[in-house]
Length: 65
Image (cartoon, rainbow, N blue to C red; front, top):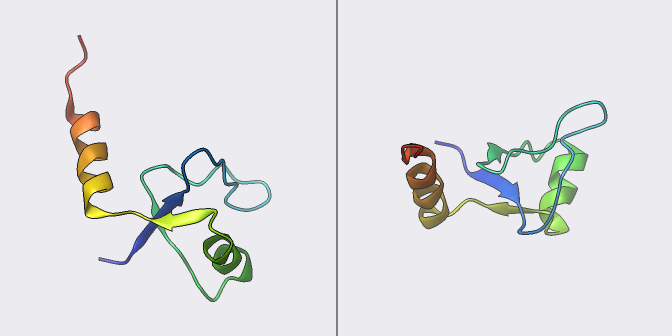
């Protein structure tokens, strides 16, 4: 599975002009794309850790009351 990156806490990251924001559950980064590579270098996107992914899955799986 490719490494996933998500927006750093408190940041809103547009994917590219005309598209939606980068999803909080993460997407793979194309490091050949200068925009995406710069987002990682500048700290706007951070790697999704196993703990964060597990927490996101647990939150998503909770039944609504």
